[in-house]
Image 1 (cartoon, rainbow, N blue to C red):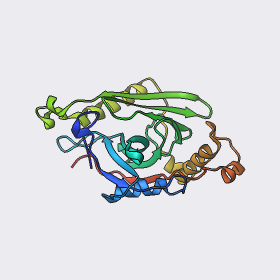
Image 2 (image 1 turned 45 degrees about the vertical axis):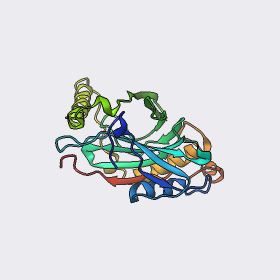
Image 3 (image 1 turned 90 degrees about the vertical axis):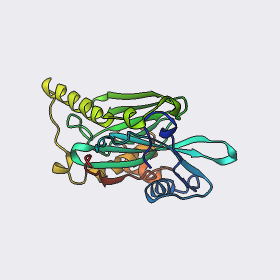
Image 4 (image 1 turned 135 degrees about the vertical axis):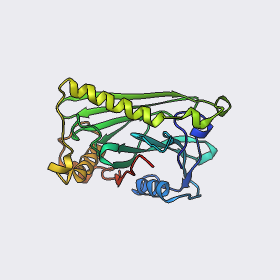
Amino acid sequence: MRAAAAGGEEGRRRTDEISTREGDGREDDLLIRAWEGGRRKEEGLCVSFLLTIPPSVGYEQNPLSLYYCYDLEDSVSRLKKCIAEVTNTPWGERVSFLFDPSSDLVAKALHVSPFMGILGSWRIKATAPEDDLSVSILVQHPDLGEYFCATLRAKKVHSSMISNRTLFFWLMPHKVAVWIYWQALKLWWKGVPFIQHPRYANPAYREEASLRDQKLSCCKAGSIGVSSSCLRNGPNGGTRQFTWTDAKWPWS
């Protein structure tokens, strides 16, 4: 189900179709199980496109892959949800979750950088992949505020413009890895403190991330300090599902 990254007919491949009912509390579970379990053809929501980087020369590097989920009601295709697949290659971990592409606030559920703690949230936006697309992630911290933003902008490349797909994507994941580790080296050189993975000091960090996200979801708040009563009374609390898995070794 891997497709090409950021453009081209190869980069927009129809994958899975599933049925959901809005507000029944099972949307996350249905989408992610259909995405992980293979093809399901029913009416409702369709996971149509995948934004990712294909492997090259036996190496794979995808810090973030996005699945674009469309509502097919009334014969009109409308981007409704996205599934994010976040991978922290050095630690061999991956987390998947559903989010609203128009704008969503998601609790940080993965240690993605040795220079950032896990406390805080991601403000995520993604546009529908047409002739171009964009994805932005703003990191919000309860004490530091908005302190990091990453944005991807890409344009569609038609298949007719790519004579050799293997050559077009040649060493692309290797370049991404070099960029990541080069930026990490510069931060280390500047004296930015190293933050240990939370699993060593707090084995329950995943459960705490899920709880923080439930509070964010039901209270529509950007802060962490909300009451437990909000969690119980919120209409949408507890609907997001995080799925943690082990990422495969990048070399094959």
